[in-house]
Length: 169
Image 1 (cartoon, rainbow, N blue to C red):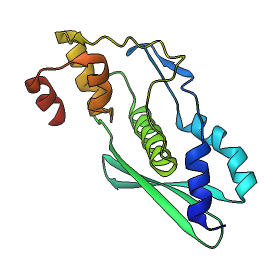
Image 2 (cartoon, rainbow, N blue to C red; image 1 turned 180 degrees about the vertical axis):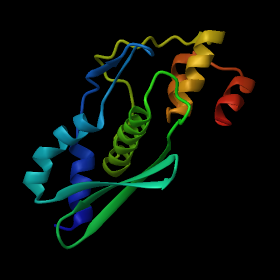
Image 3 (cartoon, rainbow, N blue to C red; image 1 turned 45 degrees about the horizontal axis):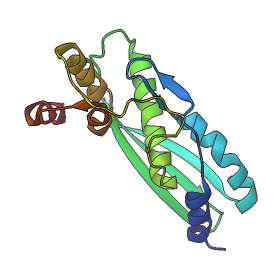
């Protein structure tokens, strides 16, 4: 079986529940550790190895590469995230750690084609509310720390001006 066939088998059978809860956003999510735990049975069954490498691109950008190999062939997927050097309430190691965790999760998600559709057990509300000034400020902090605008749009109704402002961060 080729590495492409092995990866395809993982991509079509892989499941990892969103078992962690974000109290700020009131949603469930999965972490890089959750993904790695769920991938272990496939590693043994298909005789592959998964490795994550991180590289500091400059003083505030981390490039993370998730690699699957069977010893003969290799496939990589990459995620690049910025580190918010001005994040309030966090020490510098925490800022880099948060960005690192986020990059690992997305590199693994890219490799294994993990979608972020809502789990049936998630308690997210499906109605979108207009975003308030305080919520918009929190959304800006979220985007600055590597969060996705799509996650904000899934919860809130944004004006085109608000969305454009978030895209500049």
